[in-house]
Image (tube, rainbow, N blue to C red; front, side, top):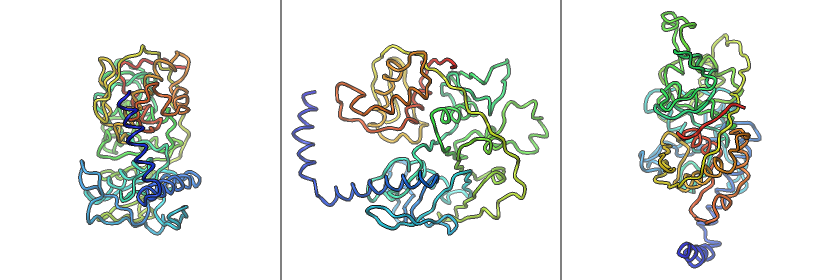
Length: 397
């Protein structure tokens, strides 16, 4: 504690005070203020995301998050272009993704996944010169994917997967070792339970049998013999927006509200060409029933890596939580987990209610030791950590 106080009081704070008014600090503040203002516009207009013209979306590599030198600047298709006014940047044009079902298509290596990754990271602000400073997304957008081997506890996946062999009830599905399809179905249900308003999916990281079931397979195996209802059959029943990257299946074109094609890292509107003449009838799909996490005793916690937490004898692996970025976030989440499971989980509060309680806390409330190395996190990454904890036990409300 003494070393941390010395560093904070005699090193960091004096350095910050001396930097007040420095052009770089002012620029950081203005970019963050603009991003917050843009996110407020996105929410007010009920858009999913805004991608500024001129944004540099491509990264140098999987381990180098700087913008790719010579990358193609983003340019919005005319049909999706909107103009906004920000407090510091002023007038800015870019592509809006409206509410509904958006499908991003295109050949391999043409920028589909690059665009989706920029959108998924748009739930947070970026520093100046990142290239994605003005790529902003609804703060309740959640990336979901298949995750073989993860733990699932008492999740209602019955909307997508019916009764399994052996009479397994998928309304309260639990397993220590989920398959691709059951893990993705759980991720969708968990995101909805935590309050997600937008789902983001990339075909490359999804379970194919949960996403589509073509006509020939339906003819070979009748629906009554197949427990999986593919997501394409449910997507318009869910009262939630979805952005999907698809490269190998055209089934989602029939249910899309808007379709973008990426060619040579340029976005084009092909909605008119892709739209089906007859759209399937839609009904409302009831959301997952609430779960009540059971309390756990306090345990020693250590953050080993940016996406790995050691909780006593249990290793919590978060490699598939794509929107979790820094070790500081993970450190804060690890402390919030203790509060959620030890203090708030009382056998009465639902998971969503526990997340609401944690949302009301400040970072300083997470620990009486004032570690000084914490960063703000979303309820969705905390929910993802809770849901992947192998010691989690739940009941139905």
